[in-house]
Amino acid sequence: MLLEVKNLQVSFAGKEVVRGIDFSIAPGEKLALVGESGSGKTVTALSLLRLVQNAGIRGQALFAAPDGAVVDLLSLPEGQLRGIRGRDIAMIFQEPMTALNPLFSVGDQIAEVVQLKQGLTQAQSAQAAIKLIADTGIPEAERRARSFPHQLSGGQRQRAMIAMALACQPRLLLADEPTTALDVTLRGQILDLLSDLQRRNGMAVLMITHDLNLVRRFADRVAVMENGCIVEQGPVADVFANPQHGYTRKLIDSKPVRDVAEHQAPAAAASPIMQARHVRVAYPVTVPGLRGWFKRGEFVAVQDASFTIAPGKTLGVIGESGSGKSTLALASLGLLPFSGQLQAAGQPWSDQAARNKAIRRTVQVVFQDPFSSLSPRMTVEAIVEEGLLVHEPALSQAQRRQRVLQALADVGMGEGVDAGRFPGLLQRYPHEFSGGQRQRLAIARALIINPSLLVLDEPTSALDVTIQKQVLALLQRLQRERALSYLLITHDVDVIRAMAHDVMVMKDGEVVESGTVFSVLDAPRHPYTQVLVTQA
Image 1 (cartoon, rainbow, N blue to C red):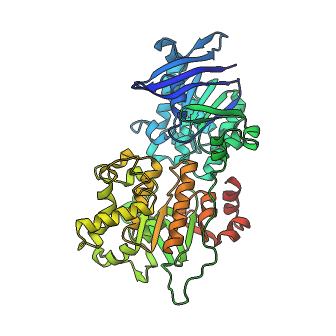
Image 2 (cartoon, rainbow, N blue to C red):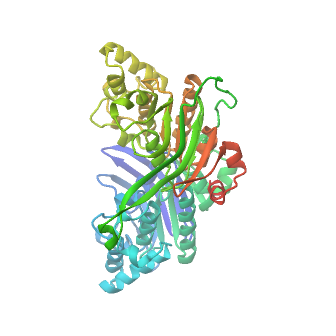
Image 3 (spheres, rainbow, N blue to C red):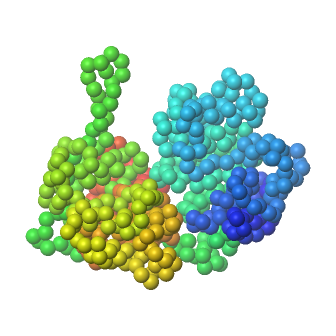
C-alpha cells in the first residue's frame, strides 16, 4: 500500500471538522474523494502534508517511501516532511490564478521546483521547465515559459500547475478540484492529460471533487464524505450502480431536472422581451510594429449575433471560455458598446445613462460568484433594497422593508426558513451565509424591482451539485410564477438541458448553431456542438 490513513482527525479551535476517517491508496491507483463544500475533502488532503494552519491533527498517514521504509506523515519532523513535499507527494491546488505567483513567469516557477528538489543548475532547470510545459500540451512551450500567469488562459494555467506538480515525478498526486473552473472541453482535456501522465509515470492520484461525471470518467475507487466522515467507499462502478448510503444517493440524484413550461405560448400581441440583430462587439488592440504608430487594430469578441427572447422563455448561450458568451451578456445589459440592433422591452440601449434607467428596471442580472458580486460591507437588507432606492425612491422605509421580506420569502429565505437559523437575518452580512444562500440573496436583489428579464451569467457554476439543483429549481419556479424570461450564460450542457427553451452555441465570437434546446442538443449539426454534448 502506498498510503494508508488511519483515524484521521482534524479540528480548529476545538471544533472537529474531520472525524476519524480511514482510507488507503495503492501504487498507481486513482481514488476520488467526493462531497459537498464543507464536507472536509480539501482539509483532509492538505492535512496529509500538514499544510493546514492552526489545525489540530491526529491519527496516522502511513506512506511508503521510495527506499521501502514506511513513515508517518503526521509525526515526521518538518525538515523530513519538506523533503517529501513536491518530490514524492505533490499537489495541484484548486485555483491556479491564486496558487501561481503573479510576479514570476510560469517557467521560472516550475524551474524553481526542479532546482530545489533535483539540484539541477539554473540553465538545466529552465530547460526542464520548458519540457514539462510542452509535455502538458501547452503550445509554443518556450514562449509560454516566459509568460506570466495572467497572460495564460484558465486551461493553460491549470496545465502549468500540473507541470509544476509533476516536475519531480511524484509517486502520489493530490489534485484538489483540478477542473472545477474549466469548460467542459477543457475539463475533458485536463482529465485525459492527467490519466496519460498517471499511466506514464505510474503514480497514484487522490482526486478531490464534487463532480460525479469526473469521478465516473477518471477514478478507480471513490470515497464519499459528509460532515467530516467517510460514509461510503468502494469501486466506482459498484458505488454508482448500488449506492448504500442516503447521502451518496442524494449526490447521484443531483443532476438538474427539467421543470419548465414547455408549450405556454405568449399572447399574440406580446412583443419579445429582448431582440438582437447582427450584434457586433469589438475591442481596440495595439498593432505590433511600426504600423501601430499610425492605426489601431481591433479584436472582435462577438460577430453577427442575432436572437429573440419571448416572455416567459429561456435562451441558453453555451460555449467555452473566450467564445464571447459573457461579452454578449454585457452588451445585452447595455454595459458594453456594440454595433447592430439590440432592444430590451421594445427600447434600444442608449449611450446616455438617464435614458437607460427605465430599461434597467426591466432587465436585471445575477452574476456567477455571489461572494464577489455582493458587497461585504452591506447588510442583507441594504443589498436587497438597493434597487428600490433607485427605481422607487418614494417608498417609505417600512414599505421597503416589507418588499425586502417578500423578496427573501420568494427565494426561500423568508421568516421560518432561514430566519430561525440566522436571527436578525436582515442585519447580517454576505460572509455569514453559504454559497447557495448567497446566490439566493443575489436573485432576491434582482427580483425586488419586478424585472421581466434576468441575465444569468453562470449562476450555478460556483455551487455544489445539490445546491445547484436547488437554485435551478428556484429559478424554474420563479419563471413559472412570474412569467420571467432568462438569458442563461453557461458552459454546462446539463444546466442548458434543464432550463432552456432555445439554445445558441458560440465559438470564437460567432454563433455556430442555434435552435430549440432539443433539436440542438439531441441532434447537433456543428462539430463543435457535437464535442460539447459528447464531453458533458
